[in-house]
Length: 355
View (cartoon, rainbow, N blue to C red):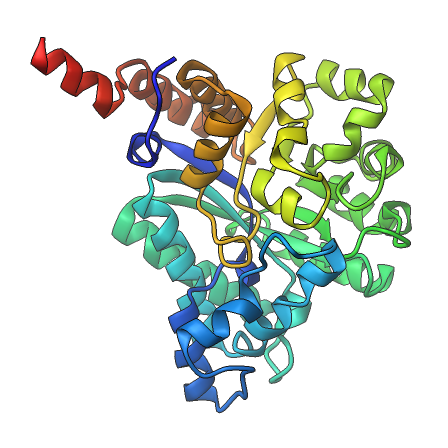
């Protein structure tokens, strides 16, 4: 098996279907926005702020992991800051050859300075559009309800999703603390979204067991599952997910940090892939996890033995799982498959040159 480098993986076309806007800021941007907006931060330099926003492996749980978002959200309360952070996320993704990205966030968390929900969505769409024009990256937005806020707020986020259908918003999600906040309480919100023929995904099976995934699929109509690592505990449900080609949005490095899995060697993405499930590889939070899509793929290559051919197949699964119209997806897949067919790692190319 040829050993791939980070640069090899960076050259591959990729998707990022599970990435949180408020978890993917650049540290210098946080400092600049805080200075502009007169927001007090826990530290005033890149190195000193890093421990507050980059969550190391000593993180004990998902709840602890979520604390870092207090810092990022504090500087994401103005129209300009939302345009900028959305643009920079898409720029960072484009620079590592992510061709299609779905950015998710909860507009309700950006209202501390009085922005309306519609304005918040428009700001993010504007930032992503600017990046698409400059770099050619295709993007979509997924609006999140938050489990630990309230089902009523979930309904509000669902209505917002419907309002922006065909205007850049491609789906609806349920995020936040999973334990003690079951998905079934948000059945109404998902009903509104599904009644309008809009895609939905749910964070499930990360901090809570397979029952969470069962509710996401059977009570909320999830088309994809965010994380889903605990699916491994229910073989029957795993077969159902496989048979119905319900994609799993895997975020390997984040799953180790939030203790959804103990260590990378235990990550079920290897087993899921071997059994034929549709798995995708994503960043979750580029800042908190200090990651990129390329780093995630390099990790499963080095630690879980994914070969180049297997990585290519997972990449194709990512494009197949995109919340895009069929004709658009098919055209994009055609280009990507051709590109993957002709791809050669630099290490192999240089060996050939020396022969």
